Amino acid sequence: MDLLTLAKTRCSTRAYTAQKVEPEKRDKILEAARIAPTGVNAQAFRLLVIEQEAGLRKLAEAANFYDAPLAIVTIADVENCWHRSFDGKVISDIDASIVSTHMVLEATELGLASLWICRFKADVLRETFGIPDGFEPVNLTVFGYPADALKSPDRHATERKPLSELVVHEHF
Image (cartoon, rainbow, N blue to C red; front, side, top):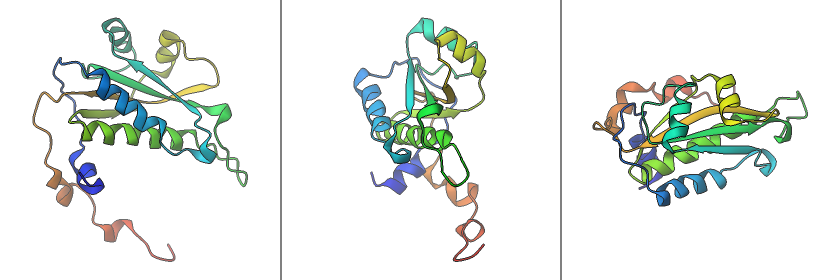
C-alpha cells in the first residue's frame, strides 16, 4: 500500500476484539519504532510493552485503553534527547511522536487498528511500571483487531481542512 493510502486508511479505534496481537506483528510494530528518525539519531526513547493480563489491569488505573490487547507507552529519555542550541528547545515529544507515528502506520499495514492516547495519569504509569527519573511517558498507543468497521479512507475529504487553509508559501 502506498503511503497516502496507508495514512488515509489508519483511523483512531476505540473498540477491539479480545484476539491477541501475534508476536510477529508486535515485533514488526516495534521494529518500525526502532528505525524511526530521531534528533541527531540519539534514539532517546524507550518503549514499554504491556500485553499480559496483569499489566493491562494495572494500565487501567492510569488510562482508558479501550480493552485493547496490546499497549505501548512511548517514553522519552529527556536528558539524552537533542536540545536545539539556539533556544534550548527539548525535542523529546517530537521524537516520541515520530516513533509513535511509525508504529501506528505499521499496525495499519498489518491489518491492525490503533489509538494514540495522551490522556493518562503519568504519575500512576511512572509508579506502577517503574519508570525512572529522567524518563517521561509521552503517549500511550494501543493496538488490536477492530471490533467494528473502520472509518472510510475517503473521510478526509470532509473531515480535514483543505490545503489552502493549512499551507502558506514563502512567507506567513
